[in-house]
Structure formats: structure tokens, C-alpha cells
Length: 382
Ligand SMILES: [Zn+2]
Ligand SMILES: [Zn+2]
Image (tube, rainbow, N blue to C red):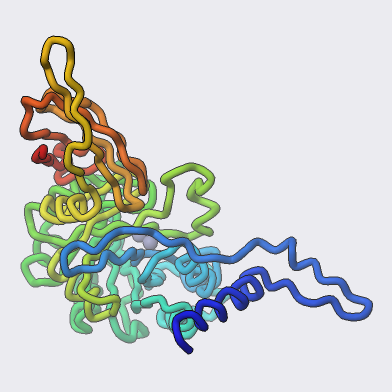
């Protein structure tokens, strides 16, 4: 089919598929108009140089551990919410439904694989190694068969547990450090963590876990060269936990800057640390990654109007465009200009500056490149 025929074909096909309104038959009227229209959201983020920005969540649970949903529900959520890649990471050591469900640490992945392929989603294998706190929990993604993983939570077996996944060449990240603030050592760089780090058995840390922003974990990632991860750790339905009725709210996730939309490219990007954790209005990551993302999304246009005051002073008018679904809030700290700029998703703001000013310097206060530092950006005024 040529382009036009394809478009026509889609035009007629989509309403039927999307709304699923069936023709009535004798004695039967279908009420399909009452169905919720099923659609995939599009999250718009421009490419960053040669990289696509993939929206990923590599931490969620199903009834095969302590989650409340069947694995294919996770696939539906990921598809509808516009993500590109995901991993189901059921606990190895914690399976409270084992008298109701035939527990098998590989089963959720097997049950979702076909649905994910049909929905054009990248599905990674994954499991959560659920050690006692401290050290706490770790996610192994890109792991292999997990049926002989260590099930005992005895601290003496912590290394062996991690080694099982490491021997399968898994990508391993430390989950929600500091999640139990009352336990001593739960938010410390313990000898075991140092051991894993030294032996290349620790590759990233969850900086954002659901509704928690682990600030100290961001500093560890920056200082030690570990990959910044963001995820939901969802046990219930995502739509039950996140207030989608409000603007800018979406599930927490990892933005992965990858050459291609494939498992191999995601792996390469994770190992290279090209990620930013995204939780609704907040972006957290290494400075070079947050900067690259910001620069790909935000564009200052040349001056379009100059106002001349009666005293001869000139004020220039500019447009600052946000070509993405990300949310940015800027505090301009240098340059006689607009002081606070909120760049809503897919929108433009007007910015004014004295014609004497050549550069605007701003802190992007909705971003974090360390626990106590926002990204700073400079705009050259033209
Ligand atoms: Zn956990
Ligand atoms: Zn978890």
C-alpha cells in the first residue's frame, strides 16, 4: 500500500479497533460505547544527539511475589502509559502468596513475553534479590533462569545471592537505600556494598523509588560512577497509586538514552550510565545527562521584538520553547530579565531581557544533579 492508502486504511480501521463498536444482531444490542477507549499515551521527548530517550520502568511486582496483579496487567499499564521498556522484578525471597500461586521466579516474564512483543514493548527479564535490611534489596535485570537463586534471607548468604545474578551477567542495582530509616546502617555505604562495587557486582542505584527521592543515593551515583535509576516498585495498579487526574503526574521511571530501542542498546546505555530518573516534575541524574536532556528539549529563539523606552533603554523579547513532555522550572539568577520561568510540557514562554544583557544564567530548580545542586544553564541572547 502507498502512504495515502495506508492512511485511509488506518482512518477506517482505528475507530473500529479503538472503540470496538460491534454491529447489533437480532435480539442483542451491544453497549460498547460504554467502554473506556483504550489508547497508548505518547510521551514526547526529542532525541538527545544520536540517542533516543526510552521511557523505562525496571521495578514492579505481580502475584508471583507480593504484587496484587497478574503479570499481563503490567504489560497493559506500560503500553497505555507510553513506556518503551520494562521488567517485572518479583522477589526471590519473599513470596507471601505461595499457598495460592505456584511460585516460580521466571513465570511472570514467561507470561508477559508474548503480550509485550505484540505491543511492541521491550521486556527484560528481572528479579528482586530481597536481602534483609541492611543491606536491603537489589534488582537484577538481564538475568537468566532464577530458579536456583538463594531463597534464604540469612545475611551470611548475601554475597552468594548477588553472585548468582552476577554470574549470569545481570545488570544489578541497589533498590531504595534508606527505605527503613529506623534501622541502623540501612542508608550507609556498608562493607558489603563496597565489596559488590569493587567486584563489579553493583552497577546502579535507585535514586527514585515510587514516591521516594533518595537524595544521598544520587550523590553516590555521581561520586562512584554508578547508573541513576528511577522506578515505581509498583505492587498495586499504577493508576490506583498515581493521581493521573492531575497535570504532570506520571509513574516514576528511568529515561534511558539509547542508540536503538532494543534490549542490547538499553544494556549498553545502562552500562554507560546514560540515564535520568524522572518523577513527575523532577529530573535527577548526572549533570552531563540532565544537561544533554535539557538542551535537547529547550530552545531559545532569536529576539523577535525590541521595545524602546522613552529614556532610550531597550528591552528584547524572546521565546523559550519546551519541545517535550518534561516540565522545567527555571530561576534566572543573572541577567536583567524575567526571573522565574515555568516551562510547561509542549509550551512556549515569553522572556524579556535588557538589550544590554548578552547571557541569561538560570538554575533549573526542577532538576537535581546532586542532592544539593540543580542544573545551571546559560542562554546566549541573539
Ligand atoms: Zn524492595
Ligand atoms: Zn520491589
